[in-house]
Amino acid sequence: METMDEQERRAEWRRRKLRRERRKKISIIAFSVIVIVGAAAAIIVSLNGGKGGMSGSGNKKGNVQVSENTNGNVGESQPEETTPPADARTSAIALANRTAAMYDYDKAIEMVKAMEGYDSDSELQQLVAGYETKKGELVPWTDMASVTHIFFHSLIKDTSKAFGDKVAANEKDGYNEYMTTIDEFNKIMQSMYDKGYVIISLHDLVKETTDENGNKVFVQNDALMLPPGKRPFILSQDDVCFYHYMDGDGFATKLVLDENGRPTVEYKEDDGTITTGNYEMVPLIEAFVDEHPDFSYHGRKGILALTGYDGVLGYRTDPEYKDINSPHLVEDQVQFLKDNPNFNWDEEVAQAKIVAQGLKDNGWEFASHTWGHIHCGSSPMDRLQADTQKWEERVVPIIGATDILIFPHGEDFGDWHQYSSDNERFNFFKQHGFNYFCNVDGAKYFVQIFGNYVRTGRRNVDGYRMYDAIVHPESEWFTDLFDVNDVFDKARPVPVPGVVI
Ligand SMILES: [Zn+2]
Image (cartoon, rainbow, N blue to C red):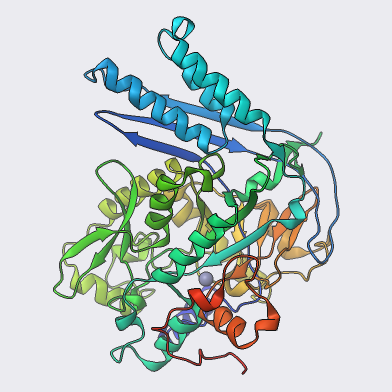
């Protein structure tokens, strides 16, 4: 019943939730891009691609079916009319070069050919010739079963706070186990870039098409084109909601867009002032891809998995916040409203929508992490139904629909075998538009592409797993990605709780 759900949720809340991702399973998704290049004027190009199809198997098992379809689209806004032609040309070329660096040579060629005077401009024609040459060097990545998917939780901006004495012991343990520090994250991304990894979307694994009944069908994507030596990976982040319980513990507080429409985050300093900067995964990846556009396939960035009970992206958008007397509000939420007497729910929702669109425009995708962070494998069906209704009514209007479900607590509703046709939970989520499912799995690869859904495991790159990799080097948890002894933050208390030594 709804009431029981709420009670259960509140009880769990009061226990202070950190034991979230149970380190077992999870999932992913996919893509869309926008690149903003600023010069005197900004040119915005949005690249969007959809893929489709394949069947794969990780180190477990897979099955295959076929179908195909590709889609992509591009949007371009022209330089402002006041922009001097020379700057417009420079900006357009810079944008085309950036697009080409992201391996989207077709788009880059299209962009240059669309420039004024192309037919009589040898410089532009040489540019296109260069793109054609580079495009000819690409090879299709055909081993979708060997695409790894890694995920993070909130990044720790200030370790002295997260691991400090002002944080309750159980929370400190939780941060130590489940979170990753900014220093660690930066080292991991640099290492993966150096090893040739490139961010793709979950949707890039497959081509999507429809059968005669209008149902989506997935087959392996045979047109994921990368240069030899590069290899794709999928990146996601869970619980990008900036929960109340993390306030003051050394984490960013909300996602915002900067003056150029680029995603960044706010951070509340000790004296209460708000600063913005690269204090979270989103802006860190934005900055890294700015410097290394070849780290992003066609502008893909990552998947942000959201719940809804505390709102999304740091905005308190759940309708319960409209009434401080709502019996469904929990202590932290009521306190937030008391601390912010001028809170305007409509304005909050409006801002969240703008930021969500800005994220999508910059290549980020969203996944459902369920509204209430519920157990998808063990919660009663009526709870799944009630929760999904809240997701659809309270979150989808802000971020748009998504077909990716990232299991909270990593709790899948099936083992590694293909979901059976009588799997009630799978069928339920399929009916609600979900086609991509991601659990948590320590294995390097866990990719399944069946005709009617795609599933991946995800590797938790957190304090728990990294410390385990250090004390059990034979596990080789991360040897394909980075040197854990170099990455592991010395600011962490050790041993990290939960790791069996
Ligand atoms: Zn979670």
